[in-house]
Length: 198
Image 1 (tube, helix red, strand yellow):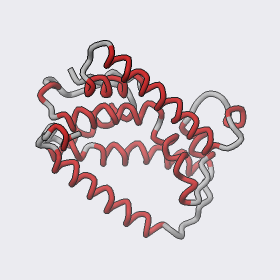
Image 2 (spheres, helix red, strand yellow):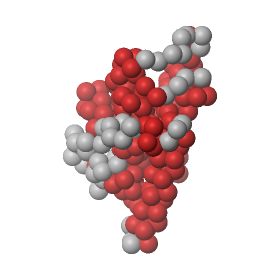
Image 3 (cartoon, helix red, strand yellow):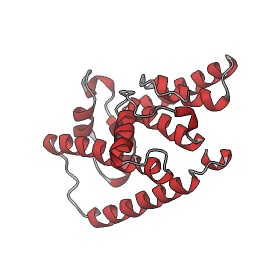
Image 4 (cartoon, helix red, strand yellow):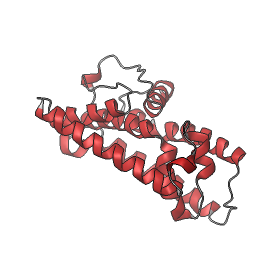
């Protein structure tokens, strides 16, 4: 999005991606042979740490682009997005580059379904079971009533979430919003967070 709109935030996203990939590769290499069994206690710790770590790294584009130069404010904006609370420190939202506005919206969209539910869909690739993470993250019905396989449940939930997001984007676009605003508002209203590009 930053490249499409020629924003000054493109380099910030490239640097953020590089930092994330580098640290992710180091952690993966250092823990590849670690114990894969996750108990309930570890599940709760992982869920808590994921929210904090994702918010820390999610604040990098704000800081590096200069859109939100103070770490505390950038971290607050990011965690507000991932937790879908919708609180914001920003006053002049329309002055932000399109890439940052899109990132801000997508943090809410990812948080709306839950970062952990997203992780459950990809954890089996690393040989890790996700039931304990699911139980720590998702309130409500017991997992056995939803699906016999937690990964399949996560994929089904994400499929429905994506379908509704696409449908809402199309309807908002037909209703007169720009395509960019339609996507961003779909991301934030699906998550019930309320971040807006306006």
